[in-house]
Image (cartoon, rainbow, N blue to C red; front, side, top):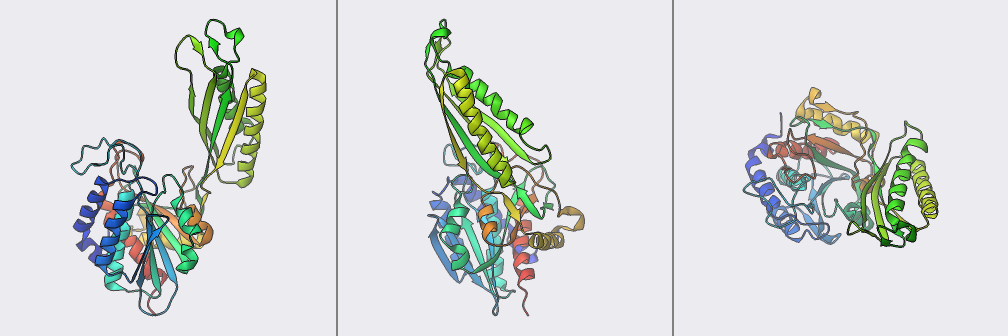
Length: 387
């Protein structure tokens, strides 16, 4: 693959950076050691400005090009997951119960590689804003950075991000114009019944049966309340109740996720879920309280920017290794908040076979680091060429 030669020259350095970051996974906004490492590298590279402490541990680094022009934003996420690692690699997590199981160590490294190259060459006009973000997995760090004003403060005109994709050939890219990832909501149902002896259920108001009834009824929202060609996922993922085999408990708890693209579909789910919980609770003689939490919005690529990013990816990996109209998927991503404020695009970069994302045996493939760094660098040079 025709990665940028200079970036290929320091690919071994990027591997070292990434594998070190893999040893120090941190959660949500608490990316202190990760941020310190990133800031140290950026200062070594000679960025023109470094603004730290955004969204607690996030930062924005500015590299000035040659001559006037707009500012283009490039984003990488830094946080890890609360998973116990099972890779067996010699650079495995040193923080028990935490691991980089989604490849954010690799995303951070790709953007650091691009930063080193761009600071050396400055073969572009205007400026580039390198956005290193905490709390993608939980906490909506991108939304917090947007709320803290990074788009206006740094006058960012367009913004791009990458995510690795296990199961797709090494160095392949895919994206799509318009919606690419779904909005994500969560729901909780708290059920209060009356417990008692398992041999005397007539003296109870059984929250276990109510939980089963509510969970089954919730699943009918997809099958009976929406148009089959509108994308929608409603998944009950947890039911917790009871302690022993001969006691009917007092309470039960249900939890799950909702994925949508259309706000009208989202509103329908919220309405129907409230009706189902209320109605089912009455039918079982229990009390039930629904908590419905609207979370990350849908990730929607700007059609023009997605097309532009696709062309840059083809320059890096070749026409037959890039797909620019893949359709959308039901995962979610808080880069959506940045795309709500500025046009841009989100792309996936294949990293080959291996364990999937969020799996305890997952490991980022260092072979794709120069590919991603080259993509970021060429996005800047092509979007803001020297006149």
